[in-house]
Amino acid sequence: MSREKIVILDFGAQYNQLIARRVREQNVYCELVPYDTPVAKLRGRKPKGIILTGGPSSVFDQGAPHCDPAVFALGVPVLGICYGTQLMAHLLGGAVAKAKAAEYGHASIRIARGSKLFRGLSGEMPVWMSHGDQVSKLPDGFAVLAKTDTCPVAAMGDTKRHLYGVQFHPEVVHTPWGGDLFANFLHRICGCGRNWTMASFVTEATEAIRQEVGDGRVLCGLSGGVDSSVVATLLHNAIGDRLQCVFVNNGCLREGEAEQVVRVFGDEFNMNLHYADATDEFLAALNGVADPERKRKIIGHKFIDVFAAEARKLGTIHYLAQGTLYPDVIESVSAKGGPSSVIKSHHNVGGLPKDLKFKLIEPLRDLFKDEVRRVGLELGLPSSIVYRQPFPGPGLAVRLVGPVTAERLAILRAADQRVREELDPHQHTLRLWQWFAVLLPVQSVGVMGDARTYEYTVSLRVITSEDGMTADWAKLPHELLGRISNRIINEVKGVNRVLYDISSKPPATIEWE
Ligand code: XMP
Image: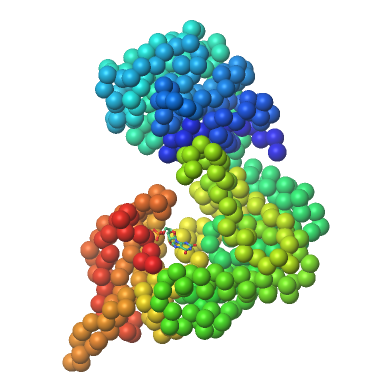
């Protein structure tokens, strides 16, 4: 597909995906590639501009990552960020030196007048710095575009060759006007249009699916989660009835979930939806199992068995759709294993039996999660699905500490429903990432009326997070906590005590198992 694009050379900084997100927020498509991608390959991608990211190295380090200096002679604009700027200076005949004092955190830059990079911005601006080295001598043709009290080259540029570098981090929230800098680079300097929109993605992706699939059929495992829901809807738009969805109920879903999937996708969107209610089969296999890893294994294996058995009933199908997203396919230089480019495995297909041979179709592999949600809205999916909280594959089974039984599942499901009813309306204002109930294998004494009770304990897990890698417990208003607790204790038979989990991740995890 010949999209107008920016190529980002990844030098291994932890937050490089943020740069890609900022570029896309400007409605410009971009790809993140390893820093040592050969220049011929870069040229072949026909970028409108190149961005060099930050990274943990110093240009002086033995084996520090260098790109081919020919990158600067491709004739397309280049923007360096932090390490990317130092490398640009180093490779083009300037000099880099250790800063007198490493600079981390807020700083204020003074912007020189007249450069396209800072068009519309002037005077003093707050920025986020994080560096030990800095440019000490400009390469020929460059001028200083901004400075701080301690960093004489906070930004530099060669306006003839369209080469620019900033020492600070425009991609982070602590540089609040960073979006303007990206906009200037992308639209004024690289001449990019604002073509990357989710509406244009839907049009392109629909056409690409039709081209690829021809008159073949596609199988899609639908879970009701955001990714599989968007994949299914996109495919359905493209090929209609030649999409066959399979939804497996593993008996560990939340209240109303199976019904919602059948209603939305089967009834409202009119998809070919095959509903396999395997509740009894899963619960028989899980009955009494307490070990979390065994629970996961049983559910994983059973899912493959049920899905494969259903697939065999559905005639010849050529393709299997997967909700792979861009972060799963980026060849990451910062991933474990170092700069040797690791591609994450597509774990979901591995397990299917050998006689089921499918070609994979992954219509979301260019998208970040927030873009997937916007595509979902574009396709008319209800916001209850688009903004659904992440829910683990093994479902309620791993929120049920101790043995799985039908009775304990019913208690947890009822408690969780109260948590969702109370918190769903506040998910955006409280910026919640996940909100759910956990049933503990602890019974304690209580009183109800005149009678003594001895019943289960529920813990509430409500967290805020950017990406699920780290998380903090949500500072819920006390009245809201009180209402949730009252509702669970009064309405859910079998529970007489509710706790609030105030652990952050790390060291705790989000789930209890
Ligand atoms: P933890 O508990 O590791 O969770 O902090 C991080 C995120 O991953 C989800 N999670 C899972 N998702 N299968 C899944 O599909 C699993 O076995 C699983 N375990 C945890 C969890 O809900 C959170 O969003």
